[in-house]
Image (cartoon, rainbow, N blue to C red; front, side, top):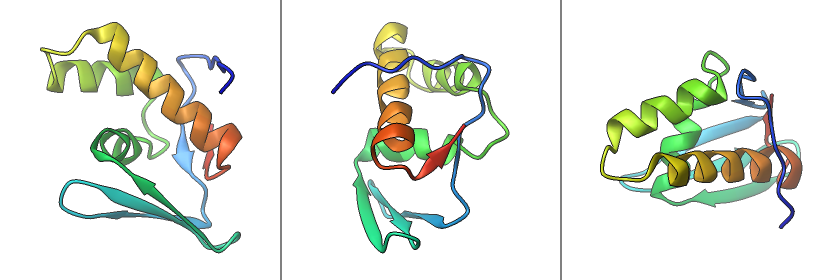
Length: 96
């Protein structure tokens, strides 16, 4: 997958046609417009829950770094950017 860079001040959120469903340790994004379902692992779920349009990408990274101090912050930033790139440009279920 190609690397997509976003400005850290952007505030991602699910499209209004999508719904996040949380299970015990994973989740789903239902896209009603495309009648599609996308499974999220635990990491994806944690990121998706923070993508509500009120937090910048930078804030999301900072919150996750605070929540998981034993994980390298660069790895967290990479995971967040990759997730947002996939959900915005790949699956088209999120806006920024």
